[in-house]
Length: 297
Image 1: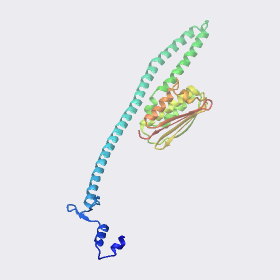
Image 2: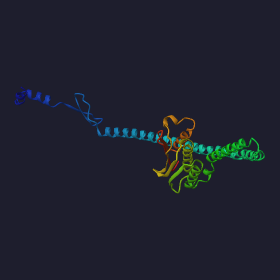
Image 3: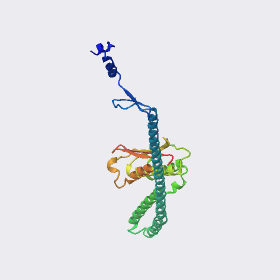
Image 4: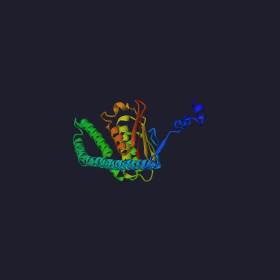
């Protein structure tokens, strides 16, 4: 056996046992590494490790540079998109105001003036026809023309952007609108206004337009007796809630129906500014409109 051979020093078998238990090795003079004669791969040298780390470092640096370039490009695209959004928002606001001005001017200087002249002529005819069989019909015509005039003047107030030009005092502009609502429709307003002192003009414009739109809907469609408006600072912007005790409606069925396009305009106006707008309503349960716009747009 192997043990017996190794125990006998005077036999040739001892040399053979040394060759079996200690494989020969060879030294690679070029690298200083040691490899065995069986062809196994040598262990990684220090120089190889340094070279591998250098390669990985260079690769990481390239990836980091590419990531920085991609981030810079994405940032620039976001800034460009935000600039376009701001420009579009300004155009929507100014374009809408300019269209309202033209319409209000034409309504006041043309239609209402002609209607006033027609009322004066009718009054003279009524005086001359007081004792004729046409007197009763002329009285009815006078009442009809009076209602037409009131309707047009109410429309003039609603579309006129004059309030937007002077509403550096947003609180006062909202209160004036609610006073007009009570005078025209007999709807009792309830206000909770906690508006910050420094609100950018663009934000004031959006808030006032959306409140006016909501109040117009209450006046025209809600058959309400009371409307509540709450405005205050919220989450880095302005939060608004308008609620009424009117007939309500099915939101999903009414968003795009004639007479309810103002709801779509309110939502789009708020979203364009970076905010949101929501509607909660059911038939017979009144309506609650909430929206929020950031302080900086």
